[in-house]
Image 1: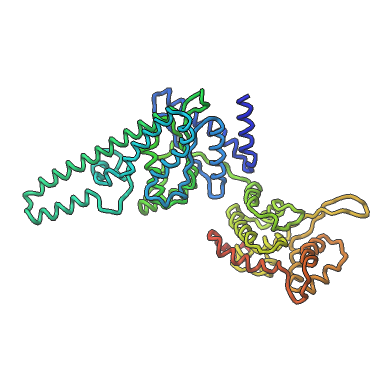
Image 2: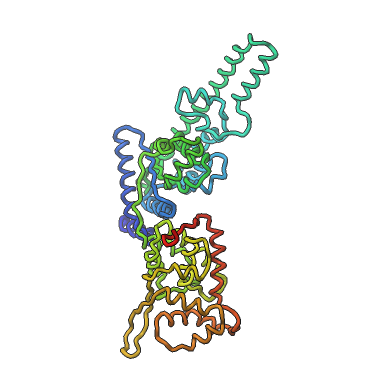
Length: 496
């Protein structure tokens, strides 16, 4: 019965999975738990760090959220870290601790053993948060361990103990002469060694207590099991220094038995961030390999699936589209234009912004909007005539209609360029709109355009000198282009 309920819950978690990521989640869950079991049997540290690599817009955040809910449904404790949301903080250590604390809280309330173990972690972790060494033993640490106090503690804008010692030595040398310098250096070195040992002891104690706290979660009676998952999202969007510090904190403090980290990143962008933090020419790719046991690549999303996902964000109440099929219409248009996946994403970002800014209760027409956005993307111009010239002749749209003579419903197609041209010819004048509505032709393009303007005729008195509200799309697209920072004008083959 329990297994059936779990399966039903997981089905519900993934019911809006348009990119077919559930199979990735099932595979990765089984892989991570299997890998940890293997490591435990081999007497190795049973922690794991997995990086999921996909470009921006590849559904990483959606996947990570659903993966976490699925793990929770199976009895795991799951902590969520949104790195970009937290990168205003000085040190990512606090953000990570806060996320794990939120995950532990419900279990600590119910189970005294969990409460006691987690309280010990927080008590010990507080010493680290107080920055006991504050960078004093940087050079010693780098020499003896692959670790520095900066790997443990936040960089401090205030002078470190080491710099203060150096300044004091210089002052004393001037006052007393070089005879006292060696003695002063010995004293300074002893102080720094003690500070480093204090920080090193705090780290080991913290890791031991964290591992014990995680171990208390493993309880068949309570329906809990390890590993504890920590899911880290949006790392590639953070400040470079913050991204580096977060990875180092996790590596040196939180990778303990029973903890599995799952990152979702645009790895190429993250490499740039790493290089930005360490300087030009730094090998960000190899540096990242220190932190991730493995990287998993999402399969390439089909254009239709990606368009479906992007269209899900549209306020469809504000949109009119042929045959009420927004995904089909946009997919056909993107194919006809020959847009790449990157171009599709950027054009539809403009479309989404324009829809959000549409101020009328009468819908805007996608047949007018999409060509305008593509034209602006490719030429840098927002112009009805320029957009018309670039509409592919192969782009056709369908409408469902009733054949009155034969008494059956059928779907007829028309050229998008034809309907676009008819709309642009008349929408500048209320008189032209009103006159065209008197036409009785059954031409599908003409019929579609008449229905576009029908709500304006029915719901307000047309000023024959005024233009249709659809003409406002021109300015809205121009404004959307200024708002959408990722838009880059790319010339079409016809322009080159």
